[in-house]
Length: 149
Image (cartoon, rainbow, N blue to C red; front, side, top):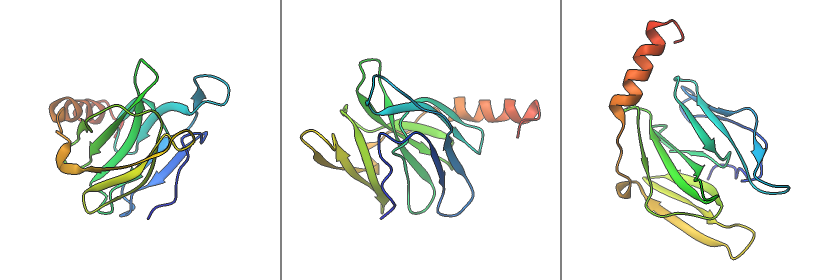
């Protein structure tokens, strides 16, 4: 089991188990005083995602990163990023505040709302429909073309 990263942490620096990719959120902000945090997730492979929470977890095979992402309504959805396909998908449902604990053998485990009425969650990777490979690949090609990778 990976070390727990709190939804209230002020940053993230998480290296994939194979050591190939780093997930970083340098600065976070709170929605209100004492609320969970959010910031821009930057992956060392050039992909960026806004409104992410630091409570992220790598899959044990380093092929996926699961990270909570805030919605307009101040709820969360679970973003899953495929490193091999450079694509993304979302777990079904909306969550209050996710604290992710592990991502092993295709199962993401954690707690929704760790402080008020906590509920254990377990999401199977098969529930997540990945898409957006064309957009992510195009962005990576553009970054490479202009010399940023």
